[in-house]
Each structure stands twice: as C-alpha cells, then as structure tokens.
Image (cartoon, rainbow, N blue to C red; front, top):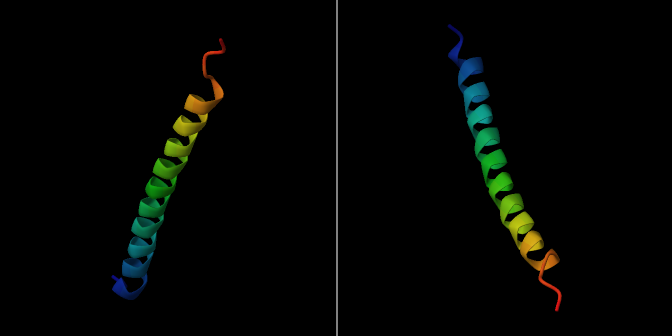
Length: 43
C-alpha cells in the first residue's frame, strides 16, 4: 500500500475532527451564556 498518501490523509482527518470538536464546545458555551442572559425573569 502507498503509505505516503494514506498517513497524511488520516492525520488531516484527525486534525479536522479535533478542530470541529473544540469549535463546537466553544459555540456551545457561548450559546448557553446567550440563553442565560437573554431569557431572564422580568419583574
């Protein structure tokens, strides 16, 4: 098999997955913060 092509593709796929997971966690925290600030009880 041609490992010079397969190995960089696998590394790129893993890097993409890690990037998407970290980006999703950051967006989730910002969304939770938005919900807490947006829907406060009005007196």
